[in-house]
Image (cartoon, rainbow, N blue to C red; front, side):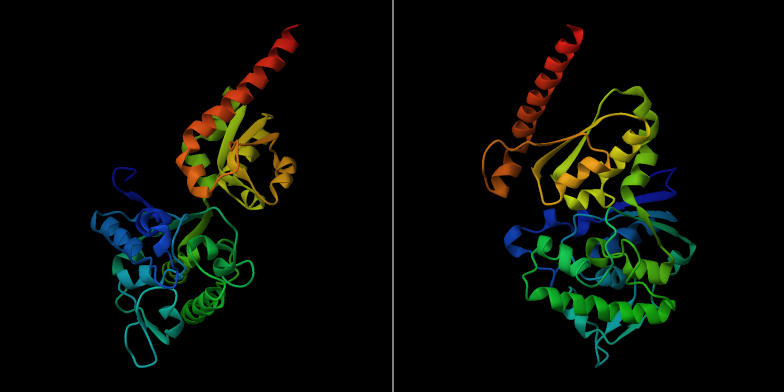
Length: 304
């Protein structure tokens, strides 16, 4: 809660995130954003009329259908029955009824923070790019894509405009789709918004070296993610940038042209993802110590 209760910041991942679902149970055919809608309703109950919804880390690919259902929208199949939750059943939606949508939303401004620029559909969309991270197998991808397309067509008919190509609408399995269509929500680059909120641009003038990072640095990092936002601010201030990560993935080499002076993987041996996560803290300390030692050697040469 911010600004004396006027603003609520809601983290989608706390209700519909990967951390909420054991790896063996993850399937975007069944996971839902319903809990996110419940959080929005709770914020409205507390009197908030400015909602900030942070996307990212979701286990869902339902186009925000569950979120809408929690807020009173009815999604019905060909026989007039409410569809089940999840990205799979969504393909059977035939009509939507917005008469039950929480009327308090008409008095709200909604900012949706996202760190990707992905569209909703296609080879670069929510299902194809992010579905596998949520547990989707290759046969599931076309099913999820068709489900999202079906929901989008109904919402576009209601909103009177194209939604599928909006930059960032594919984030978190298209979770923002309904809020943009029905509530006039705005998609905002999340990393930039948080940097402004925290005043990082002012801090840049007080430091000599900027260090940032994430679990995996790759080609997606340059597409609006937090480390790229930090690197942009550092470059504007003329500061060097080091980035730490668990791994350096495909496309990480392009980051040198995007404001990163050096990239470091914290892993010191081959291991599974589970092992890397379990040992992340000591691995990062070892990597940071090595980098600091290299910097100290450089300073000693300068002094000499």
